[in-house]
Image 1 (cartoon, rainbow, N blue to C red):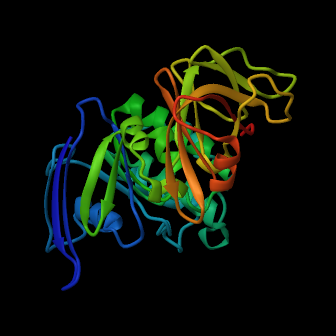
Image 2: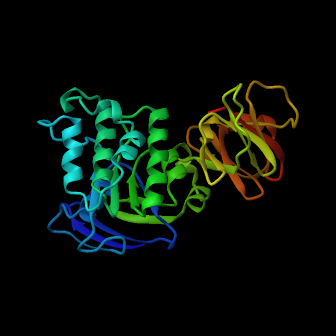
Length: 333
């Protein structure tokens, strides 16, 4: 996908965004601080800014564009079923509404009045409405922010499966880096109205700088093993080591989880009894100073990489240095 978008928002802010993705990219995640221009970019692509100009290989004059805002924008005079029926009326094809209702977990909401829905319920209905309308491209602006974590994961997993199946391209704007890392093929980072970096997820996450330490995650993945029914855990192999997860994203037999650097502890002992189930043997690749007396430790094993954000005091007491073999421990999620 090739994208060029421009818009003069004010005398102080101009959107001037350009990027190019790999041909197999179907889900693009857009991240960045508040005021970076993420929502403005989506508004331009949705043709909501008359003064803007853009070129996007994912769209054409005849493209059907679905847009879901954080505040949902449902029709308050209609109930949920009425909102969805209106979208179906203008759909380009007869999409499987029941599959979408179920995947967005809206079946129990159909007879509810919009004014009595919670924020998370409104977002699910808005997403359901956008999908029922059979879009060619779907633009999501913090579309899952009001859902609880478990429900958000379930709906986003359905969304990815459904859009891949039906050839719908998706651009997701979110402050939830973990969700973007799990469900997107590539990421773009915005600042001051410009796209300052973009590329495949692992490439973007592996190049994290010290000042981004508290706003990044690592992705660990590998073949999913048989679900442990007794303990409600999914084990999977990562670099020939068994890791465990409560709610991994599993696609084509591959399990994937994200790990926050703040959740990782480093143990010099290879064998150590611990209530922390996940222990990943790896090597210290680099140590870099971070904010507030902390150190960002880059760890790797094979093709997998993760980070640990620890105190300078801990790093000093452990005499950590590049080349050390350690165990990275992180709790079951």
